[in-house]
Length: 272
Image (cartoon, rainbow, N blue to C red):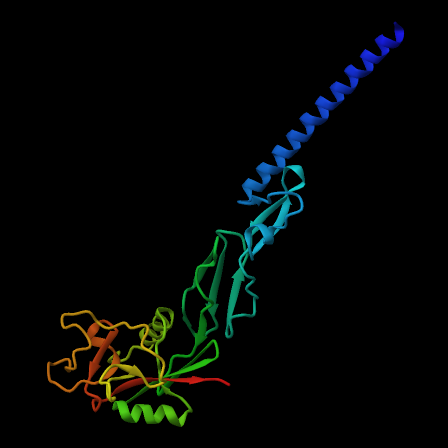
């Protein structure tokens, strides 16, 4: 009888211990899960999963979830403090919602956004550059490409010849990002007019607009009018417009003009 009573007592004690351990485990798990949620994290599917295998590149471990799973938070790509030549970078954190702030040294102008934010898909902008705005030339180097903004006005043919002297061509504009960059520089160096020749013409056998570089015209920023561009007419309505430029009178959209008119120009040279 005593043995039966003793067995029942021990069973009761073990049950109480199990309940207490379970409660503590659940309470601890709840605390850690809330912590993960507070850091805008996600839990891996199981304890053997990694953050990167579950959610992709940029996801890193930041604590734990219940049942031994990893708590994962998204981290934007690191931006080193020396990544902005002739300027400074301030990045406090790389979590979603964090910002990276940029400024240029005295005498330099910032081309691009002064601040970008870390989102769930990465930084919502690119690192700007710091350049000296000057005439007769403003030079900007971006991702292996040298852009030379020439203040001296010349016709389209002479402008292309001047670019060839530097080892390049009048610029092609391949994307909206590249176009926005060019406009940022033009607006910083605004003097008298914003007309800049680019390397686009329909002086060819097909009589259709093509880049001098030979690249296809997959992106354009023609002024939509009226008059809709290109219309092979000069701004005043005269015929004979066959060369393209970033056009002051069209709000820095593209237009076509007589190739013998004289405007500023933008050269593009690819670094080896």
